[in-house]
Image 1 (cartoon, helix red, strand yellow):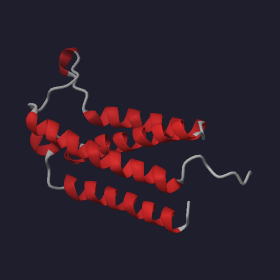
Image 2 (cartoon, one colour; image 1 turned 30 degrees about the vertical axis):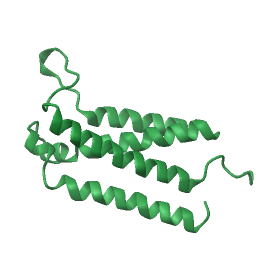
Image 3 (cartoon, rainbow, N blue to C red; image 1 turned 135 degrees about the vertical axis):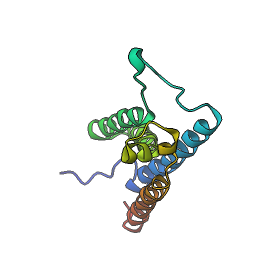
Image 4 (cartoon, rainbow, N blue to C red; image 1 turned 180 degrees about the vertical axis):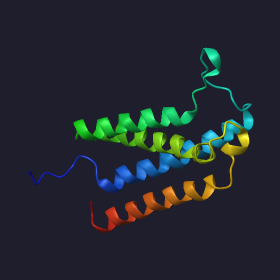
Length: 134
């Protein structure tokens, strides 16, 4: 194992993930309030792609970038993918927990503490990385 420093610090990556996580949730909630609910990609027979799917795809891409490249730009792009994907996926936690298609499930009260908890965990990880100069 080499002693080379990574191109981007762990604290920087965590900060990018946290920032884009918050942006994704805020943007998604605002768009749902402004645009009528249910607007999105739909296939025949009533299949609707919720943005949790897009979030999972973005997180997978972020993980792919993180695993296969150590250079600065791919690491930053992977961090962006991970933050956006995590935000989009966690944003629909109310629908998942309540197994509901209704907009009431999307705005369920249980979803807000979970969103805040994930943000707090990312913030604690950021503080830990900064404390240990990583």
